[in-house]
Structure formats: C-alpha cells, structure tokens
Length: 242
Image (cartoon, rainbow, N blue to C red; front, side, top):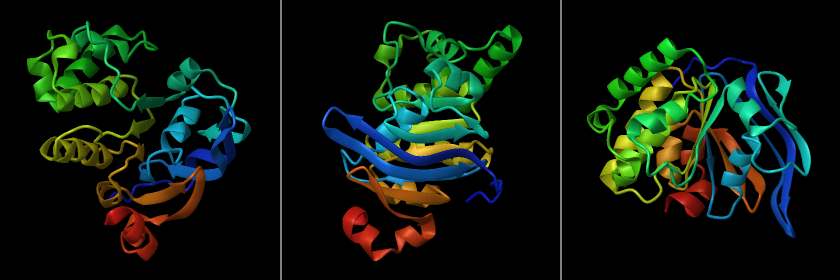
C-alpha cells in the first residue's frame, strides 16, 4: 500500500447532509482524502455511498455541510468547474456513449482541455495502459464487454488528468476474473500516485486495496480507520466480510 500520502487533506467533507424528498440520504458525514491515498467507502446497498460521490462531483444539492478540494470550498460549484479543478468520476454503470467509438469516448473525457498535442499523447498513454482498448479504438463503445466498458470508463476519467479519481462500484455486474483485472488496474493507478476515493460493495476487495476506509450505514459514518484494522474489526467482518 502507498505511503506517499501528504498530511494536508486534498478533499475534506465536513458535516455533510443530503436529503432526497423525505429520505435522508446522508447525515452529518465528515471524511477526508489525502494526496496519494486510496480511501474506500464501504456499506450495504442504499447506505448513501454513491450519493457521497455525487455530492463531491456537485451533481446533487447539499442540504448542509461543506466540501473542500485543495483548500477551496466547492460546496456551491458547478459540475464542470469541479472537473476543471481536478476531480473526475467513474460513475456506477459506466455510462458510455454507446454509439460513439472508444476513441471518441476517450476524447470526451478531455472536454475541459484545449492542449491538443497533450490530449493526443494522453490518448496513447491510455491505450498503452489498456491494450484491449487500443485494439478496439474504432469500435462502438456499446459493443464492448462489461469489463472493457469499465476499463474505458476509467481511461475516460483519466483523460481529464484528475488530481482525485472517484470510482463508483467498479466491480458491479462483472465476472470475478474481470473484477480481479479491474482491481489490478486500480492497484497500478495507486502505485502511480493517483489519489482515489473508492465506493465498492465488495468490502473485502476494497479493504485489501485501500489505505484507509470509512463504513457508511443508513447515511451515517459508523466506523473508520486503516484498512488493515477494518479487515480485522469484528463488526466489519460480521456485517460485510462474511
């Protein structure tokens, strides 16, 4: 696991509450992510994990609380501003442009950039990282397998050169062999120094790859600490590790 994390948090969430109508999705949530870390957010379906990521990307309105990125308050920022500041999200379900090619989807990830030569260099870097995508660069994204679409979703997010990568359920709907492959990619990004906030229902996999973790239950944080400690925490083992 990485030991290059900085002391000052890159992302700070303070006392965050979010409501969907009568449903309290998040309540008084506070967490942080430091540069170079992989931090996991684990919990059952409906615990509020994806809502937390969507709040950071500024896709859902904040009822109360504060979100800061690189010491800048982004609570009221627009989603496009958040991308420009250096946050990219790989959404649950991948959300490809199915009728566009692999290459077009990658270029879409760089929509906030104008440095054409550097964008092209980054496309080639992603093809080097994901050889399967290189083989399919002219193929329509909708015809890719689930695992290939997940690779494309990660590569597309990396095209914005993010300082923070938000991964929402990267193992969802994938065969176990493909899940292992996707988590090896996440491990290699971690080694390369990419800062990641990972939402994942497979708690064991998430804790094995992360530096620290938070447990979210019914919209509230209940447990947090180094991943190695949570792997051995009896409450976590009973509820999430089987």
